[in-house]
Image (cartoon, rainbow, N blue to C red; front, side, top):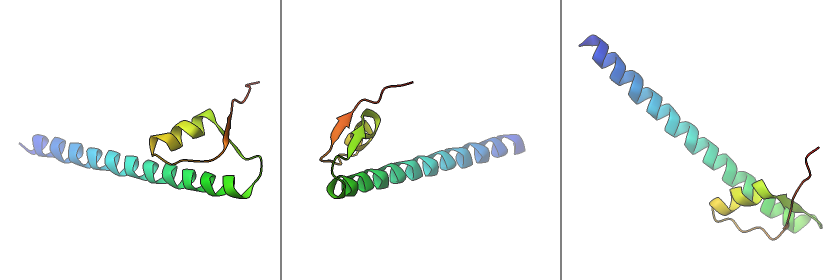
Length: 73
């Protein structure tokens, strides 16, 4: 019985930590997109990478900047 309770507590704590981590990542990505939005207004020639565009599209944040494909070395 004690082992079952320990397993349940570990599972609940693990799931809670996972949801908190996911919330933090989402909040961080949204803040980054808002920063890109500001930079696009300030800096002429500002551009996004394809990954940054996809990230901001996921949250519905529109950025008026061109999307550049960066060549890998």
